[in-house]
Image (cartoon, rainbow, N blue to C red; front, side, top):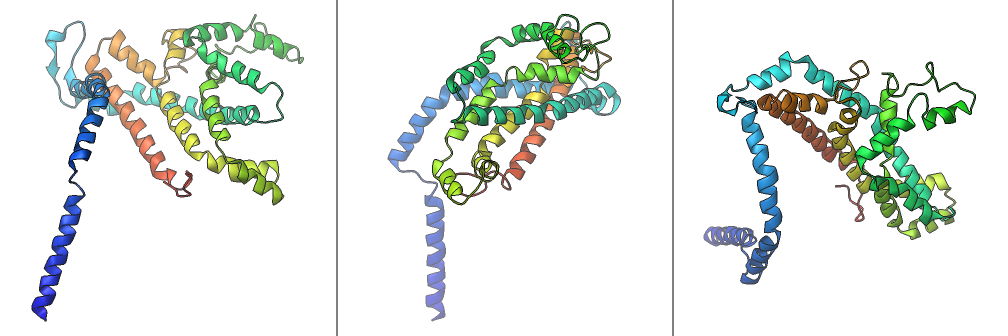
Length: 332
C-alpha cells in the first residue's frame, strides 16, 4: 500500500513538473509566430537600445568621471565624488528640487482639475457648438511652444498686456508701475507660468473627452431611474470609470513637471529671475552640463532626477490598486 502511494506521489510530482515546464515550451507554430513578432518590433528594439538604453548606461558611467566637453582627453575616474558633491555639498541641487516641487504643487492640481472640467463641459449634450469649442480648445496645441511663450510674455506685460487691461475693467488697478507684474514678482511668477502651461492643455482635455465618451450610457440611465443627480452621477459613475485615464494623465503630468525647463529658460535664459524663484532643477542641470561643460556632474544630476521620477511612478503604481478601476471591475 505504501509503495503504491509513493508511486502515485512520484507520478503526481512528475506530472506537475511536466505541466510546469511545458508552459514554457512553444509549439512550432507559436515559435514561428514569436519570431515574426520579434522581427516586426525589432526596429523599435534597435532604436530603444541605441538611442535610449545605451546613452542611459553611458551617462551612468559618465557620472563616475570628471569630464568636460572642452577637454575630453583629461577625463579621469573619480568614483562617487560627483554623487557626494550633489547630495551633500551642493545646496543648489536641493534648492532646484524645492523650487520644482513648489511649482508642481501649484500648477499640477490646477491643470488636472481644469482639464477634466473642460472635458466634462465639452462632453455635455446641452453645450451649443460643441465641435467648435473642441476645436478652439485643442488649436493652441498646434502652435509651437516657443511661439506660445513669446505671445504670453506680451499678454502678461504689466503695462500693455491684455490680462492687466481686462482686470482694469473691474476697477482694480493692474496696469502700470504699481500694478500686477506677473513676470517680475516672485509671488506671481508661478501663477504666470501656470497660465502659460494651461494654454497647451488641449491634449489632456482630448484624452479626458475620449474617456468620457467611453463610459456606458446604461449606467447613467440606471442612476437617473434611481434618482441620482448630476453631481452624484459624476462622482459615483464618471470618475471611477475613467480612473485609468486619470492615472495615465497623473503620471505624465508629474514627470513633465519634474522636467520643467523650456519656459524659464526662454523667458529668463536660466538666470533665475526674479530673485532666484525660477532656478528650476532642469535649469541648474543645463547650466552644469552645457554652460559649464561639466558633463560628469550633469550626468549625476540627471540620474538623481531619474531616480526621483522612478520612485514617484512606483509609488503611484503601488497605490493604483486602491483607486484605479478597470472595465472588469477589478483593481489593478
